[in-house]
Length: 179
Figure (cartoon, helix red, strand yellow):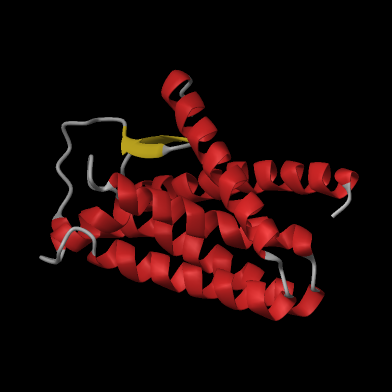
């Protein structure tokens, strides 16, 4: 990649990071709202506005699963778009969901997140659903990278920048609540 392409690719990575987080969390918010609850969301979280409301187990599974399901659908859609269009600048929209859910899976150590909570609700090990989701997303990334002949250097750059953008979004979200 040329210097201009690296700059453009980094900008696309930033946009992919923001949009992936935004639509992931918005999916949680939509699930709460469709279940009839008043909720809000930020770039790294969605919650009921009234924290005293107790959701049923089924409702907790639905609201926890909505974000990862959207993220998985995003990955599948982009996987096929890249297959058809052969455009490297779509790759961040496939890679970010993988990096995002990998980070979330690791973060289960501190507090169960979406897939971790679903695993626990279903009586599974904390990491079971996270492992399945991350493995599937990695499969899409790996298969795309091989098929499109993306170099290791491109994947390492994409991974490092994805982690930096994920950390930046998490940091900013802790400082500023948007919605």
